[in-house]
Length: 317
Image (cartoon, rainbow, N blue to C red; front, side, top):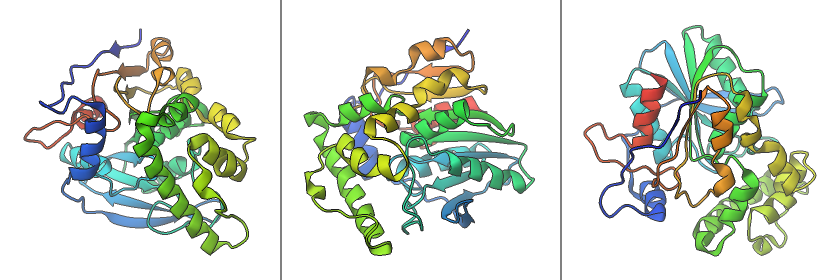
């Protein structure tokens, strides 16, 4: 049987609100910056990714995948890095293509189903020959990519466990949720970041991409129809979402995997909670706290660990 759990997470007083849980950590949480050692890896298609190592002298390594338009310096990543380092894990924090303050070389970047660079990070770490086991940790779109990798790809046997947080397991329904008026703040923020990336690519490769009438784009469907899908070989946004949603691959995950999705996550809708898929796979542990927001789960304690970090450390260890 699958262990499928409700959680005991209780947000601090006055913070029991989905948007507060989502926004406050992003704006105000300041974890101690990890001592990162940056390494640039050349990819098989002659592009590059930047990875940041935070070492504790361990034979166990956790590889962290950030969320949409994030990077290794985001508070949710550095908080998890610190939590894992404190409990005896080395950490490799990925920066997806174009997310390390420098545009990547190719027109393609990353997307919800692009798992090549996670596999490359695993291979890079394994080649160092000091790690006996690797765990994967993913946030939001990085969590979706992690689940897709585990359930669709040939996973290196050195990968033993995984933990993913705030995962849009059904991309179509998540896109529709973010298109709602109540979530316009998040949508506008993403579109501003996307527009900057488009401008960077226009400067790097004139004539291959443009931002004409970009201001008319109001949601993910319009953006993915115009950019993500054609650039990465999909017919349209619906084709992209259908092929890259992780929910369809969960049944095939063969290692112990923790999924944490708060029921009040403003980025998610009902199809993003893979209850049936979890029941049918003994390797999946699903936690669905009533509160937590998107990549929130604020906690105050001596260890300076958020609840999702505590649960991840417990699960991986």
